[in-house]
Image (cartoon, rainbow, N blue to C red; front, side):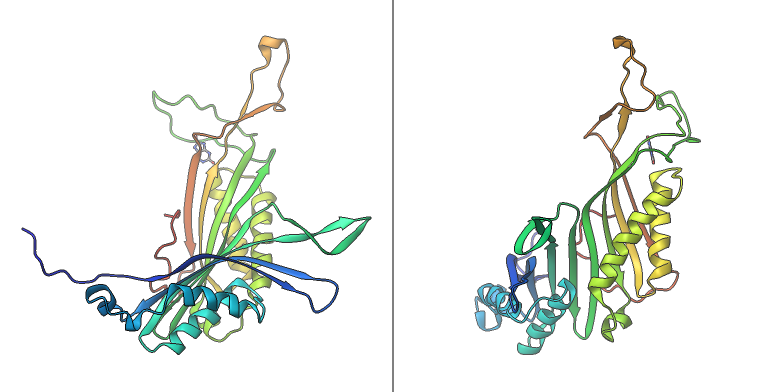
Length: 304
Ligand SMILES: O=c1[nH]c(=O)c2[nH]c(=O)[nH]c2[nH]1
């Protein structure tokens, strides 16, 4: 049975992937901020979908222009920039009751020329990509920050033993292996801390990244699963303003190559770095008591 009565479900719209580069050039020593910003609005948009009435449709083109115009005042941090956009659109247009604003940030560092940091020449930093999602729903505002592609490896102090074995098990236990992964992590800030404006997002970002790296490297790893918990513990201990932390981490296997056909030994020095298949280890951690996440995780894919 089909019905001709169709009602509009969840919807949002806007301009995706506005690539905005801001150069601050008050002095000869320029600063660069490089973002990929997506703006999407939510609200009373039924007439637009059902009747073709665009009276409530703030054009995606206007959303794009607003992103670039706001960059004129500086970006500061992706989170602050997105919060500004969220407050602007919901304040300017009464039927826009919320939305979702997302950014990736690409890091640059100064080129070293003749032993000195250059004033206005930069080279892209190759480590991770920073990201943030701000969701506004009425008066509630949620901030999730994170990073992708933080590739890390420890060449010892990792093992994997004690797992169940059946007739399909061929994996040998080891107490000394390479552990390598590409960390994707997202953390959600406590709603109250977001609302009272007390968070220095850039400082917390730098510290969380440093703590994740410390957590990965410091202790012996019994499994990537346990290492994720050690990384999470570091972050939660240092940052009361963070309520939740999610990980998605491929276990990038490194297999010891058999060199005996060539009359050579291989005491854990030559490895085949397999790109697939890979273990995929995902885990979410949160405090026992957390602020309401609302719908803030919607649309954040790649985590469990
Ligand atoms: O750290 C690991 N976790 C696993 O779940 C797993 N499974 C596997 O085959 N090797 C590993 N390593």
